[in-house]
Length: 115
Image 1 (cartoon, one colour):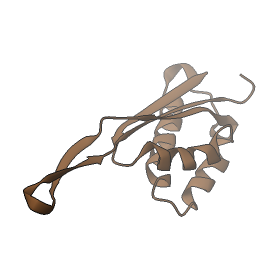
Image 2: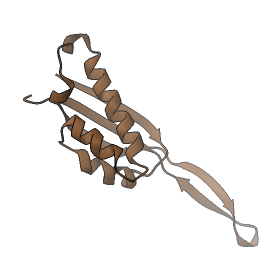
Image 3: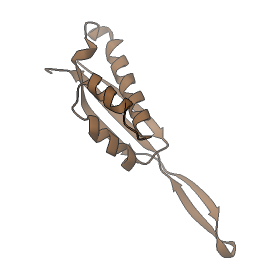
Image 4: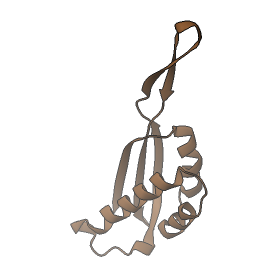
């Protein structure tokens, strides 16, 4: 049995989020939450929130009501690039310089150990 969660338009670059996502790929859910809670990176917060959502989706599913949270692991975690917000800033000699503010999408899939 699998469950998934998707967080879209996170206001952080995918490169920063992927660095934290690599820490928990394939780990047990309780161990992954512990790692994320004590990781001193801002990217750990949205990933932890998405992981908790995936676990809650698994536990609240009617088909998997007999699932023990300690038997779950992070089967897949993917960080994709989202739409970039485009802003302009004043520059020298009356010009404008484009500023791109990146966004990301985080996809997490959890499954039972042994599947």
